[in-house]
Image (cartoon, rainbow, N blue to C red):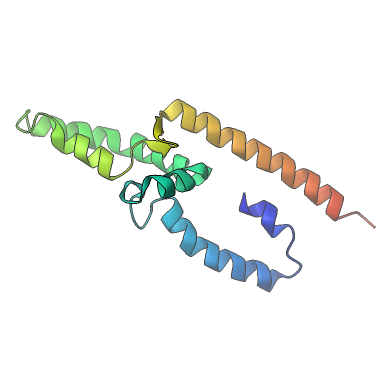
Length: 133
């Protein structure tokens, strides 16, 4: 999404400054610094509108599912699985969007749709803005 904005910068230094600020802000948006589940419902919805947040959630699900299953098995039902449920809630294993949750397939569809839209938009803007001499 931000690559569309970058097309309008005229200098490399302006682009670098934009990405410097953006990299710090994007850490919060995708839940790298603070889990998105710790924000209010409205902020969670705004954060989860960005496909990077949903891609992060998908990766978290894929990479940690085996570990969480191992933790659950190791506890042998002492906590009735509540530790794993709490960890999944705390670390945002589902994207909360407009008072509902998206499953992995919906997150993947949404992310791919936004990525394809942005690629088409970049091609159209770039070809219209930068004519060959």
